[in-house]
Length: 479
Image 1: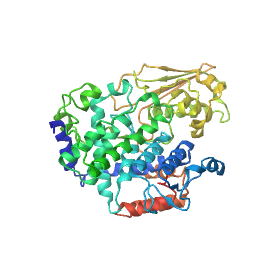
Image 2: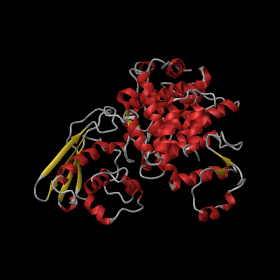
Image 3: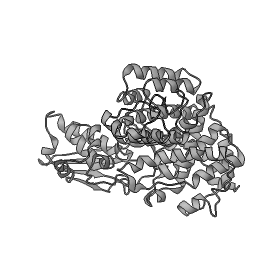
């Protein structure tokens, strides 16, 4: 085992978060936010199609299938054992979905709407991969403390790796949710299941060699698939090592020929890991960005700035359609800060999730982002004409990777100008979502009494299993 790998293994083994309530509290909110991102996606056609594909491949009927009778008839040959059902967690039937496929489904679904949290060092998404992998390998006797400790460890390793390889990794075209996420998933699984020494090094090694995910998939179903594949491959690596005699390298992070050198052409030392580990912790600094709307987190500052401007303009006449009076809109970024917002004139709502132009258009047209518009198969040409009035400029001072700031300037045909700058919008690490905000987010899918039962079970159980059973009963965590 090389020294860098040994250092990572040692920290995974030895990390104790018993006295780190700051980290544990973020992990708890992040888990509820993860569920709030997963639940609304389960009604999406692509998510249901993946669920049916997984169920058909394993000769089970997928529980909570909401497809139409016509769709069922068309796919009748893929259904067997119609009298039996299996939830993803596998507690309600002797026919269970394979763990790796559970992780694939959870990861794909929880990232499908791009409603899940993001982190600046990683330049990607923690919870969609980590919690998906952990849910897939849970045992009935697992306890919350161990579950969240594993998440914190996986997040810490991912964030540190991200801080070492970015921004070059991102600008080269990699999507770190996939490339780094699989390593974080392996670390979290190893921590939860108590792997040590060379066994843990081999798990990290097998995960690292599966690093994949390219950013050109943004605006397509390929992007959330990265999260599903990262979670699945972490679980698959664990099961492969547990149930076969396969042996793999114990030097995945060797400075000369390991992962960092191969992926980023950089040399990383053991001190690069040790000096960063839980100092104070990636969940604290730079922290998580959580969302109140399903679009790329790089647009959050611009969306809130546009909301403030729209409110000021509308104060005089609440019924005015602002675009009739708007001459142009300028969105100001620091250099390179809009890299993730790759579509300037999107043609579909899916692409619009990664377009500041589409998001600002919505805010100025309706006063707030309209989530359902991200589901449009085609954006009206008239809307695209409005978006052509929006330009991006890069005249704000350069900021660190962990900071975000955006200014929006609206110039009316009358010559009046309105402007607003935002750097700590709702959901940012310095203005985080509260439990009440998460309740509102859960309310997009669940009724108030369902949310009450979920929160009650979450806060009053020591073991994870009773809570998972509650989620099943309330229609969350199924394939």
